[in-house]
Amino acid sequence: MKFYVLNGPNINMLGIREPDIYGRLDYKGLLAYIAAGAKELGVEVDFYQSNSEGDLVSAIQQALGRYDGIVINPAAYTHTSVAILDALKAVDLPAAEVHISDVTKREAFRQVSYAGMACKYHFVGEGKEGYVHALERLAGEVSGALRILHALPAAAWREAGAAGELMPAPGQAYIHCSPIEYFHRVDAARFAGRPHVLLAIDPARVEAPVRWENGAPAQDAPRYYPHVYGPVPAAAITDAVPLRFDAAGRWLRDPRLPALADR
Image (cartoon, rainbow, N blue to C red; front, side, top):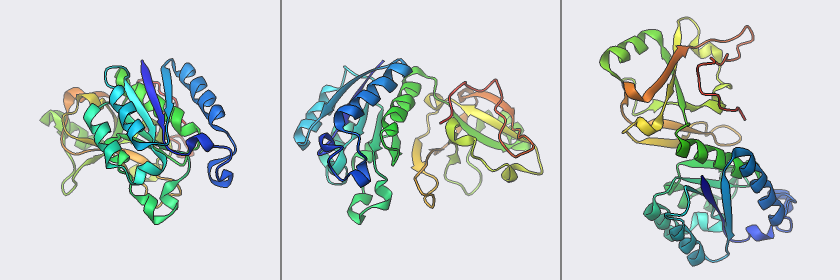
């Protein structure tokens, strides 16, 4: 499994450029960190950085047939380049957008991401770790190991089982799901009073659109959650286990769920 890590303008100036925003790790150090993370994940990576929009478009086009996915930090071109957006859409490879700083808290002109419109995953404000998290997410998708979680009352699960599919709740446009690494933050009080079931869903088996959207806009850093805009067929539900919490209100992971690492 091999991924292409692309960086846009001025990323080569890391360590020098505005270290209070981007940190003191230089570009060479960033690549070493990503390479070490890729090795730990068991995936291969190639790197490319350019200060020119057209070069980045060409690099994206050349990824087709050579890589399993793209990790891209378009830097300033994030907010201006329809050409990069169109290139990502043209090759149609699994893609993850990364930003070292939390652009959601910066200037107004940084609040639009054209490239992000073609990326399924978004890692914003996580520093160098965002690149490795992006590789982890893409590797999970490509290998078929990616699972998303959805909790619902046991009675609703019985109804869905009888119907052969899970539908959005009445009045809702989508089914709100969570990546497994976020679910440990869930508030047990939300599920008090009646038994709930936790479903593990294979998004590759869902025909309806699965859009990763910021589900916590009021938080200090955005958290992107998978929203399923349509039915989830029974065949896409790989596990259904009781939702349980310990005395302190912490989620107790069931051993039948995929053994994915928290972060």
